[in-house]
Image (cartoon, rainbow, N blue to C red; front, side):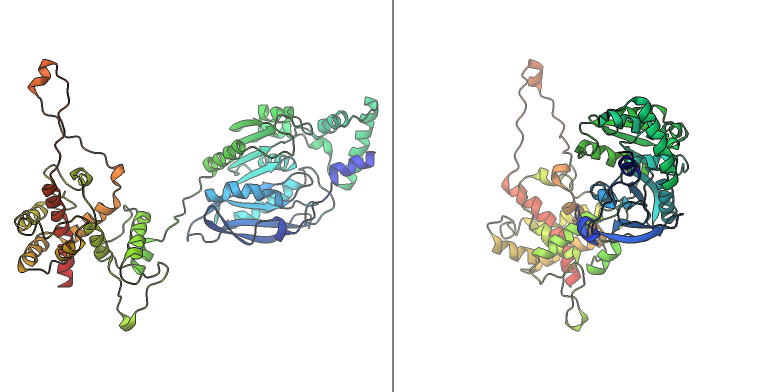
Length: 512
């Protein structure tokens, strides 16, 4: 009986597993991003080889360091226990390092020490990660024996950014005495104490540590690392009061979460959410852009005079360009490589031309649909420059709209007439009005106005309320609201034609 109890403490059943079967694949996709598993071996201070795995993004931008969390498994556990932790941490740009402690899993060693020697294995891993320039700060996530290991190491290394401690025991000797009652070993109490003293000597001789030294409560007041404690309310193996004792004596910033379940039951989702928020706050992972950089955009797309700066939303611009390429009448080019055409000339249209064509297809039913682009007098707003040229352009088009108002109808039911108007090649008057518009309006301004027109979601624009005119009837307590004036069909077509002529005028000037 005593020998079985000794093996239960220092030589539990070892997890024998196939890494390719129980771990994440060497390359896998999670939450829409690609990651990879890097297997490696480290040697601890006692000469034992430790089997380790490091989960990192498949591609990391240059000069970008990501934080890392080391997952410490429990007794009879292995690094495969960190599979759930990968789902929690990797989408937050936090890498995950996991290992088989000495005497566990596929690592070398014959005995475990419930945290005493495991803290030296953890020190070996931390030293390895400190040498990696792609790792910024380090956090610890331990469960059961792994939580005790994290506490013991955290008392020696205050540079750890944060710790999650799940189901840690406060004192190994007290835990062994409690297990006698849990498993209902009916022997006198003094006999149990004598048996524990015998086990102490045997364990000290075999596993090279003293069970009386595993008093975690003594290390709690010496540890100032932010910590999140977790424990199952129905845990009978390590009862909840162990966590309470450590929590009460802990010196650093702390929080505790109690949840339904026993020692080995699956943890609830709200607990994992709390862990994710905790590590995000203490590790501060950087944001990794998920779209192409501005240099790639300029390489694969002809931006013309339009430059992508730090103040513009590159993701939104990329989506606009991709959608325009897809609906273009020309052959669509791939977004991952420039198109190959004969004679070295590109057959794809520039971004400005595509934006202009899209503006020409906008169906305007109400003047409020363009209130973000027009001022109170229904003129184009100023964009980085004086608005005199824009106003003169609209005035020049105003005289032209009366002659070709019917021919340039912009309704969707008259595609043929709209085509003649958009080409601006029907008569000399069209060309002259286009020339006046192009001469007065800066081409750069065309690009910015076009981009602003397409990249501004109308549902996010705050409509400017027109000031209500005072009515004498209000004084007679007539509170009826005045009816809104509806825009006539001819006025809508006139407003639409102004915008199209301005946007398409620049295109004709470029072709000329």
